[in-house]
Image 1 (cartoon, rainbow, N blue to C red):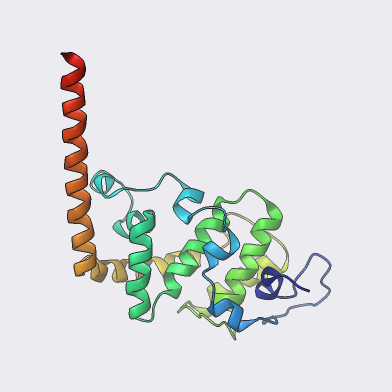
Image 2 (cartoon, rainbow, N blue to C red; image 1 turned 60 degrees about the vertical axis):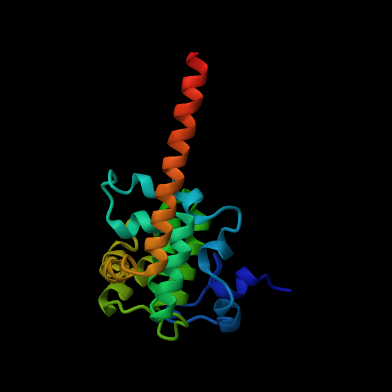
Length: 206
């Protein structure tokens, strides 16, 4: 019985002899029931996979765009994705996540799987979660995938286009009640932590 992974990634394999399958056989129900990061890499949350989790207290000193900070925090990542889902634009976050996972991987076969997932799910003609990307960028990505060139900048043009969408989504998300309440609570917890650390320091110095 084929694995869910093989169903979602389609039939493209190392021994595939097809010349240019612009679409692949997909299990659309399986795709609709799963998020790419948790499905492809169930071992850890995306922020753990990519880098140290970004906490709200570090936002002000970060050189990254605000949406990158948000998506690097597990709680806020899910909150922003829920917000984007309410606007029918969550596919932009999903493809961003997958591109970061692709770039972070140093394993050729893993990159190949992620690249096919990205193309099949977001870029192909019958993609179940299409993103608004220029055809020339889709064509260029497919040409490299077809010839198995899993270079680090494979999805750079697509990422740049998605970045603009995510910046717009993030601007609206930052005004939501859920985000503002989360940040206020995070500030309170940080203040309480600093007070406890100060008390502990005073006790030790006595």
